[in-house]
Image (cartoon, rainbow, N blue to C red):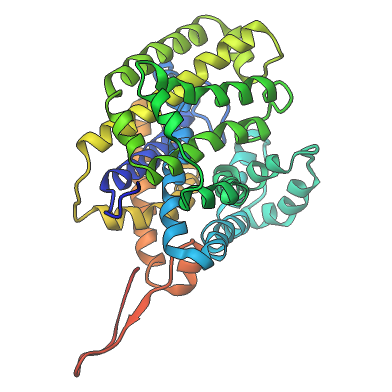
Length: 398
C-alpha cells in the first residue's frame, strides 16, 4: 500500500533530475553535437558527458513526474485536470510568447547571419516559426515552438491519457502481485524494460525526430512506473534490494554505448535515425537498458540514503518549475557572449553555469512575490493568512 508520509527522497530525486538538466544545457555549447549556440572549440569531455546523461536524464524526470502525479491526484482530486492545465499548459504558452524568442534570436544571429535587432527579429519570427512544417506530428510542434519546454505539454498529454489506468490503480482495482513476484527474482526487475524496447524498436524508424511519438511512448513508461511505485511501496522495497545490480548494469550498458558511439560514427546515426534492422534492435536494447538501469538505481539509492528532510528541500522543490522555464534562455543569452571570449572552454562552462543558473534563482525570487507571475510560471497563488489580534495579514506559499 502507498505510504501517507512525505517521501523526502522523491523530493531530493526531483532536485537532482532538474539540477542535472540545468548543468546539461550549460555544457551543450561545448560538445560536438548541434545546439542553439556553439563555442568555436568543442571538447570530447563534454561529448562523453552528453552521451552518458542523455541516455537517462529525461527518463528520470518522467519517473519523478509520475510519482508527483500520484500525489497531485490524491490532493487535488476533482480539480486535478484544472490544476494540470494551470501548472503545465499556461507556462508553456507563456514561454512560447515571452521566454523562447530570445533563444531563437541568438540562434539566428549565430547560425543564420541575422543582422537586425531584437525588435526586427520579433517582426518576422512568428510567421517564420508558423510557416515551418512539422509534417503530421503535433508532438514535434511542442519542441519547435517551445524548445526545452516541450516537456510540459508532453507531461500534460501523458497525464490525460493515463488518468483511466491511474484511477484504477488508486482504487486498488489493478493488482500487481504477479509483477512484484517477477521483479523479486534475480534479474526480474529488467522485465520493466521490455515495453520500452518494443516502443522504441517499432516506432523510432517511423518517427525519427526528437520528441516525436517514438520518444513519447518510450518516456511514458517511466512516467507510469513512477506512479505505480508510489502507489504500492512494495515496489520500492524490491528495487532497493537491486541497487548494486542496477548500478552494474547501468555502468556496463553505458560503457558499451559510449565506446560504440565514440569509435563508430555509424552507430550514432543508427541511434538517431534508425531503420528496422538487427543493428537497430541491438542499439535499442542497449539504450533502453541504460535508461531503466540508471533511473531505477537513482531511485533505489535515494530511497535508501536520502529519505530525510532539510530546510532547503521545500523551497527548492517549489522553485524548480520557474527555474526550469527560465534557465535555458538565460544560458543561451549569457552563453552567446561568453563563448566569444578567448578562455579555456571549461572556464567558459563554469561561467555560464554560475551566471545563468543563479540569475534564474534570483528571477524566481521576484516571480514568487506576485500572483500574476506565479500564475504564468505554474505556481500556486499565495494564500492570505487571516490576521491574528492586531497583526497585519500575511501571505504564504502553499
